[in-house]
Image 1 (tube, rainbow, N blue to C red):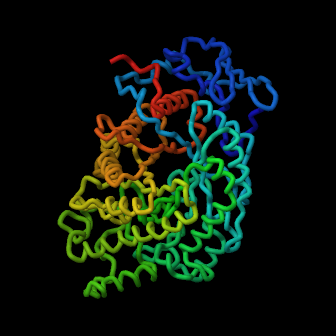
Image 2 (cartoon, one colour):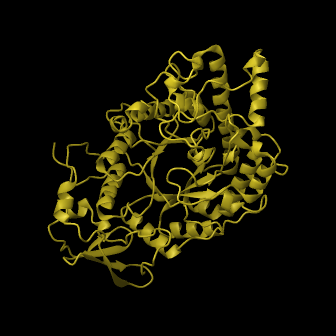
Image 3 (cartoon, helix red, strand yellow):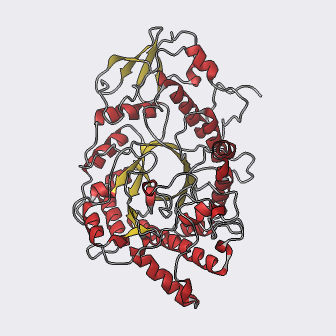
Length: 536
């Protein structure tokens, strides 16, 4: 099985020194690599020699050996080993087993719904399988599958991908991605919403979320049309349901076989249940507070109606003094300490704004349960950790999380997920508050405090909690932070994450040093012994 020139992964390294694990070498890398063949999981046998090449015997359809150069041949292995921190830390041997998934590249399926470089992808999946990764996550893009006409679906590339994953004994987390790809941090491909939807948007731009200046955000559809028949006779929620139901029928064999282990339902930008309040395309930069996104005619109509029901028609407007995308809370009359966010009107507006988010999740997940009865379903929340140490939590408020210092804004969301038996997937579990303070002290960020609050909001209502990293993570410090959040120390109830999904398969992950650290992390998540842990 030769490694082709992989268009999808560019310079992604072949299965080479990345597969030399601490558990095999026991005491780090030796001065010269002269280990003979050893077996790793997944049907691969490797032989290391001083020539810094790896010989792989590929088991399967015939057996043959092929030589691959080691990633980073010029690196002195002793220096690499010595550079890894060996500080005292927890031994996770014997702790609960937490499955580990890896997100596949965004462009693994092209705009024609064809699988890009299946041979190269198979090679990379074998590498993941060799370190006992449980499965992979893949986005099923609405803009690809239903691209040209309503209820005309093309799943061809996904079927081929799913077959490869299943044949390798891996599981699948599948995301129903009803959002646009492109324009956000980490997006390296462009996948817009379906063409027929964009044509509707050309004549009716109010189908998109809109800010105070009237700028439309084409990342996803506004929740204002959840129950409006503006999509060629269907509501947005009906469109989502038809898509999910067709997926369930098309891939029934993968559900029955258990290859599809979980469905994550996208409910906003980046597949997250939030407003698109901090779009890079509109000039937002970290740590800006973002802007409210309720100025399309459908949401404004609902706001005015809510104000009339309350008996204060003049409240049927969004705040006028909430700043702009890159404002700081103290620069605005609405979010500053003692500001209007805590006034009678402010509380009314924020209750309404956040309830729109909860209602959207409630509607979509009710139909997801109909489409995927008997399958684990998850919903993803973003980790809006900047300005968490202020009273108003401005960045969370514009995103739809009504979570100021005096109120738990995640309890209501957790209760809604509990109603539907849906797991919560949360981000930013690898971030440390101290590191955020060193980089952006003005952001008043506290990712650790946010993670603790959200995880406990979910655990308090006894729903499964999964997680993923928000930013690329290759170092032991980040992995250890994930492990600590996954399996809290001395928790009397023994609570732990139900799964973890790593962001994302890329060339850097497969580099020798990074992949050894990743394998070490997977062992910790699985509750296996890690041989290089120092004695206490």
